[in-house]
Image (cartoon, rainbow, N blue to C red; front, side, top):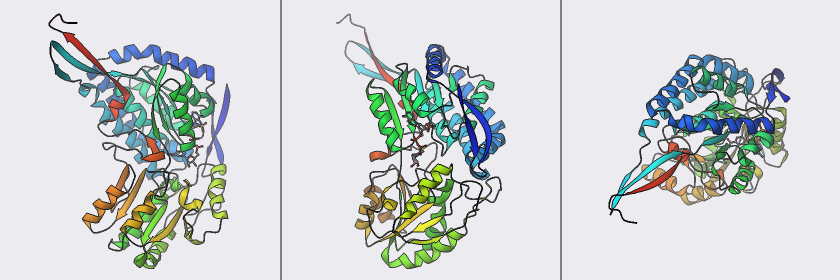
Length: 456
Ligand code: NDP
């Protein structure tokens, strides 16, 4: 066994050492999950629902502890971390309603009866990134367990603590050990076994588009089911007829929440040319007002970046020629701090406008009319989310239909509600998580014909 040191990104101090799962141990865990699958799928729907609700209650009882763990491990502001733990609880409650509603169809056919069953897949492997360790884990394991699958979950090497605690809480709630296992370890070791081991029937992956493509290619070898939630380069489109004060006041939240380490971050602000100067005047105090600092403080709005390495990759985006319009503030260190930063690139091919930076840098560009706004918004390989600010309902709908993205908000930056579907167009992903249909993505449809006429 090797171990990794877990670091608090706000202080750069080592806070825990966690043993990493080897490839052999991952295989053994997958095989235990496979052996546990028949008895888990045989649990009566009402009993499976009760166990998921008890798990949700255990998360609720432990909410403050989970939130504090995330503050220490991920540097998330405490208010955000409480929301994240609450999201796991809510997602568990939401999908606890599913086992009793996983009903098949009876389809009229001559000479007999035709019925369909929603069968669980078996073992589901969930691979979680470091940016939202709790919610993204829950979006995978809650519907998978509800549908009668067993789950092996790999947290990111940088942020394993809350996932390990969630496994303890599942056990306390009565979910059998081999039904939900958390395996901290490297993507290239544990994640890879999820892709390659034939007993894993589906991989749910959230992370970079680059690794997502490797996962998809690997899964194709066994025609393994896969759901991918990948990167984003999302546009926040501000029309001249919008409530400019609100659009500017909320734009920092739209991109700097979680220090921009968010696949839904609105990292491009497109502003209609006639209000561009006024918008920038309003944006500057809003950006300078973002409270960056100790994530344990209730008033903090933005914490540090996840690691020194990631901070260096974010900082490298400012080495080019794009002018920095203004920045907010950030502590000097220790810790991996980076200030909210607004840039105004002139060239549409600038990486600031095309690449997912995953940090607190936002690029602002002007546009002339609705058609150009849609064209600019779509001028990316990604298609995850976006915002449209306008007072014209017709325009809101036209632009919503024109932008190629899975999750859009009008006069808001809301991206995630667990009872609505979430996922991306183009290279932002494949499939949808959350919402009423997510459980079906963890089942196979089986069609059975029963002859009543003695026919062939
Ligand atoms: P990765 O895509 O590398 O990692 C995400 C998860 O996948 C981690 O658990 C990782 O494990 C695992 N993983 C890595 N390689 C493999 C593999 N070959 N097989 C199976 N699993 C694997 O993201 P990074 O953490 O490296 O972040 C890089 C960039 O990706 C960010 O800067 C950002 O742009 C983007 N990103 C996007 C996210 C999103 O929400 N869409 C989330 C995270 C990152 P390990 O712990 O070993 O790294």
